[in-house]
Structures are given as C-alpha cells and as structure tokens.
Image (tube, rainbow over all chains, first blue to last red; front, side):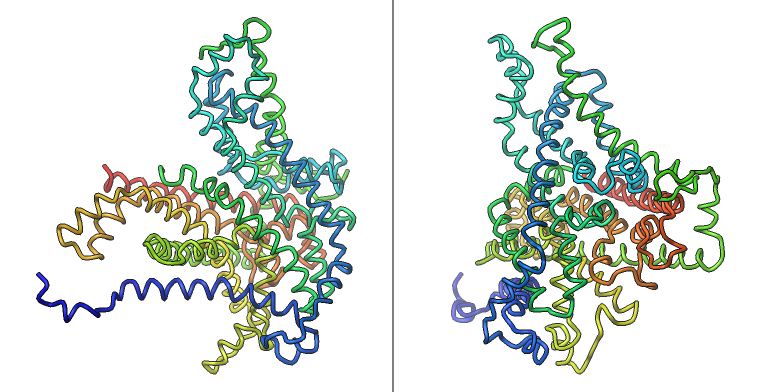
Length: 279
Length: 307
C-alpha cells in the first residue's frame, strides 16, 4: 500500500493551491478598492494629484473634519435615521398583523391574499403612478410622503408568512383557552417566537431604505430633507475633484455599515437564502 | 380554520387588524403598479394640476416607431439585453466557482466570504463612489495596473462602450456576493454521503461535480438564474452614480427615470410621464417574456433531472 510513499510524500495538492489562489485573488479584488479609499482619505489634495496611489505619509486627518462639516453630515444622517426607523417600524407592525392571519387562515381568501403579495414581484414598476399619487396627496417633498413610500415590502410578508407556519397551531388554542385575546397573542406570544424572522425582515428592509437613491432624488427637493445617499451625491457634485475629502466622506459612511454588517450578517444571509435552496 | 379567540364581533378582529397593512399595500404598491398601464395611454406630466388627456397608443408608437428617437430607443433595448446577458452569465459562472472553492475546508474562507458579500449591503451610492475612485484615470489603481501591460483607459469618462463595460464590471462586483451565498446555501444541502459514495467508486472531481453537485444544485441554479436575469434587466442605479445620463450608455430603466423625471438633460424630454409609463410597460413585457422563457426552460430541466 505504501510502496510509493517516497514519491507521494511531498506531492503538492494542486487543487488546494489553486483554491487558495482564487481566495487570494478575491481578497485583492474586494479589498483593494476599499484600501484605496482609506489611503486617499489620509492624503492631501496635492499629494493625491502627484501620485494617486502612493502611500499616504502625511496622515492628513483634517479631511474627515472637513468632510463632516462641509457635507452637512449630521443633518443628512439624522434624516436617514428618521426615515429608516419610522418606515421600518410601521412596516413591521402592520405586516405582522397581515402575515399572521394569512398564515393561519384566520381571514377569508387567505391564499388569494398571499398571491397578491407574491405577484407584486413580477408587476410593472410603480414609479410613475406612485409619483402622481404622492403629488396629488400634497406629500411631494415632505418627509411624510417619503416615509409612506417605504412602509410596504411584499418579500417581507412572504418571509413572515412562511416562518409563522412553523409555529404550532396548538399554541393558538392553548392561549385562547387561557383567556388570551387575539391582539395580545400576536403581539406578546407570536412576535417573540418569530424573533429571528422578524430580525431578518427588519434588517433587509432597513438596509434597502438606507441605501435608496432613486426615491430621494425624485421626491425630496429641499436640501434640509436629504438623506445621506442624496447628500453624498450632491457632495460629490461639488467636491468631485477633491478626492481626499470625498474619500473621507465615503469612508465615514462605509465603516459603520461594515461594522453593522458583521454583527447582522446572519440575519441578512438567512433572509436572502430563505426559500432559495428549496426552489 | 378553527378560530379560538372568540365569536361574534370579535371574530372580526384578525380582519380589522389586517386591514391597515393591506390598504397601504394596495394604495402604495399594487394599485400604482397596475395603474402604470393606464398612464401609458395618457400624456400625463409631472406637473400638479396639468390636464391629462387620453392619447391611445401614441406613446407606444412614438417609443417604438417614430424617427430617430425610436432608433435610439431600440438601441437602448438592445443595450439592456446585452447588459443583462453579460452580467447574469458572468455573475452566475463566477458565483458558482467561488461558492465551490469556499465550500471546502480552507483557512480563512469565512473572511473571504464576508469580503465578497460586503458590497451588497453598501448600496449603489457607496459602491459607485468607491469604484469611481478606484477607476480614477490619472494614476488610480486600475490605471496603474493597465499601465503594466502598456495599456491605458479613460474608464468611466472614456467612450460610451468603455464606460458601459466598466458599469457592468461594478455591477458584477457588487452583486456577486448574493449569487455566491445562494450557491453556498445550496451546496450545504447536498448530503455528504453522496460525495463519500462517489469517492469510493473512484470518481474524478469533474465526474463528482457533473453527476452529484450540478444536478443536486438545481434549486439554487434556478433561483440564481432567475434573480440575475430579472434583476439585471431592471438594474440602472449604478449608471446613475457612475456615469450619469450619457447618450450611448443608458439602459431602459434609466431611460424611464430620465423621461419621467427630467434628468435627461434636454428640456423636451423632461417630465413626460405618460411616455415614461409606456416605456415601463415595455420593460415589464421584456422582463415577463424573458423571465417566463427562462422559467419554462428551468422547469423542464428540473423535471428531467430530479424527476
């Protein structure tokens, strides 16, 4: 059996080597753009102009202070937080009470109702009529109108319905026998049991709003209402040639997102793969 | 279904509590989505109080048949298809290879998974700005890299074809993580006994992939193909951030936005929402035809493989 040990002893596992090569290549492709951002944010405008990729030797932290001030970040960040938090809160509370009776069949035509949410994924974009609606409601260029656009999420409902089905029905009966009412049951028994799915839905929905750029460009024309995405685009328009300042601005928004992502990774991934592998 | 939380009036509680969410959904999402087809037959503008008239099929005729604009529109449609075909096929292939590599027990695989997935959560604005810097034509990293081979490029500021190519690259870079994650989830559902049996039978790694992994990965393959094809037909946010509305680079999604909301640069094109709605319906039909064809093809394949 081991007649050829002397030959195989030092045989290189090429499969492993090429796998590590792929990993290294990926790390470069995904890290270098980020490292370029960090490096640029520490340079002065002059040294960037002379050699854009040269290592920042001057560690010019003033870029951050400058970007924070000039980009009006505190205001835009506050707007983004308000839009994201309020739209997500309204969405989660209303959809819990939509998803639960649909999953349980406590309302008539539950199956048909669920279909209404599923087909939304395939219908034409609602862009134009939505705009006409907000305009005619007098909500154009108002935070309320903007928030209203983001209080629905068909995918979220589908995820919630699917995970409610894994809660045993006997629980409903037992709670009712103990005199628990419907509202209290959904709110203080179903919701805690559903925590992982709810967390997934919250995280996915909130990220979507936070990163949204089309809707703020269409609906919010007053600078005081800009969320951070729009603010960043406007800042790029004005300071586009001052890359060190712009890079500092981008970096200040990227780092918190990455940190948050590292903590919430689990929920994001379970949301994206839900149902994907079962077909 | 058996309902235990009371009778009579209180039997209505679930329905009453469902109503707010359902109504908002109808008003904000479902209704407008369907109303797009109605608007496509009008000359609606984005101005409040302006009269809206019924114009029949005029918007469609203009979009597809009239003069130079229609020719440009057909070029936009062709470009949208090229974008979708290129992005979805490259993203599918790379996503599969990466998932296969990262599904092995390798040191540091979790770090690489996280890195590849990371851009997904950063959103189009940050993705776009990071790449605008990376593709900085005057001595940025990409420019320096090309210089090694004696090449140079203006990247996003270059010819329309060049700019278009780089948007596709960024689109793939940004969304590769989703494809990878879905494949990884699929790979983890394949029982390890199958691999052990194949190894005992002396199958080569290509045979294992061809006869075990590929057929059993069918659900993730289907999901990824559909998501990539439909997603890339509708994607245009990166065009907005990376190059703006430039002739010779736009895809259909951007054209809809630009004609409907006046980012097209020329005053004659601005705020033609009836026309933009007609273009939305064209995009919808495109997505529907391609999506259904792909779906039918995938179903047949699935029946053939999994029985």
